Image (cartoon, rainbow, N blue to C red; front, top):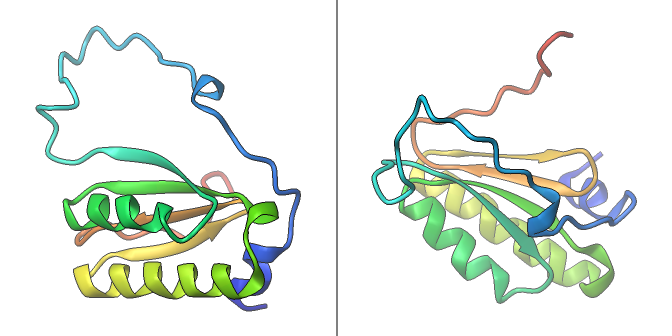
Length: 119
């Protein structure tokens, strides 16, 4: 099954900022401005959303992108997928689809394991 088939399948649920709970990590006093790399959360609903994702990956950040299927066409998702694959290749990073509703794109030096922990 190809990447596009995986992208287009699934429940299409999207997550919101309030879906993420901030945990207090007092042992680490690192602000996002001080961090060399960050894990960024994004939503892909159209081609315009890809620009910020590409910029983040070029800057060295890992991006976890929710796919909002219902607002895109097959052709648009194919183009978005191709653009993000190209970015991952250009920077020497990695890209993988998680379940049916997320893409993970990484910069150089960060590979994504294809096996889940504990399996």
